[in-house]
Amino acid sequence: MLKKDFKITGSITNQKDKPSLNYISLIHQIEGARRQDYSEYEIIQGVVKAGVSGLKLRTVLETLPNLTLARLRLMLRSHYKERSAAELFQQLTNSMQRVEETADEFLIRTYEMRQKLIFARKESGAGTVPYDDSLIQSMFINAIETGITDEAIRSQVRKFLVLPSEGESELEFETINDELIKQVTIATAKEAERKEKIRNVTRRRAEVTEVGVEREVGAMKGQQKEKRGVVVLTSTPRPCVQEG
Image (cartoon, rainbow, N blue to C red; front, side, top):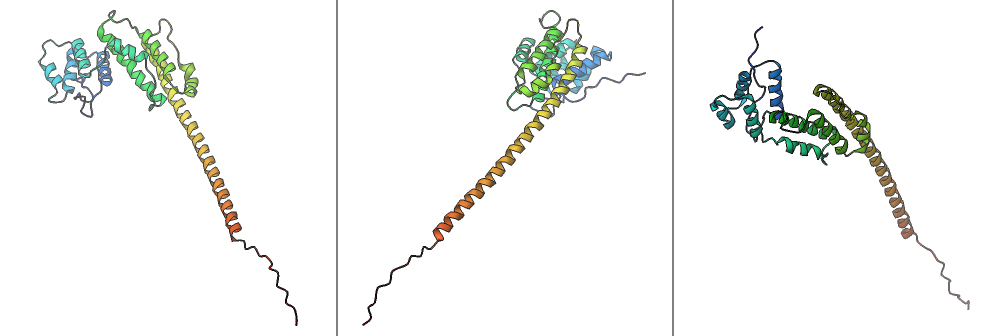
């Protein structure tokens, strides 16, 4: 059976242009091609062709002699302005849910950070970066446990925040992470629903209270008007008239 030419889904553009194929998606497609036994040359050609016409990166790649996949990936990191493994590790360690983020959005952002760190470690070469898959997974789990700001959500998902055991593979980590993402999404939705119910109850109580106050004020005003409208009649003694 003939194998199709390797083709990247999406286009590599300048960062300011939209839509642009993001770094994680691009590397994921490269990794997929390697698992499907595409040659380095086929993968490199697929990536080069994914660059839009006029892109400086594409021009440079097309003129480089003996371009290897390792060098290509380094140039892609530069184009996407990706951080180093050490910077990403520090960023993952300090990851915290932002004010405008929901818990599931924070989880996805932190998971993307984790993936970038794994890619950066692989590109740096074995032994050059002191972060193995197990350590990265541990830091990811710790970042989620300490970074989610809502205690109710954190309590619901705590049993799914499983630290890696010795000898576990990246595939096993992914199974754990898939379940964690699922549970955080469910917990976030439930907590949002609960808070919305509380807001509705509070709003209804406020409306009832407001109506009650308005009625009281109206009744008091009515009483004051009645008092001002009362005519007090007093008897005036008649003068005595003597008969002649």
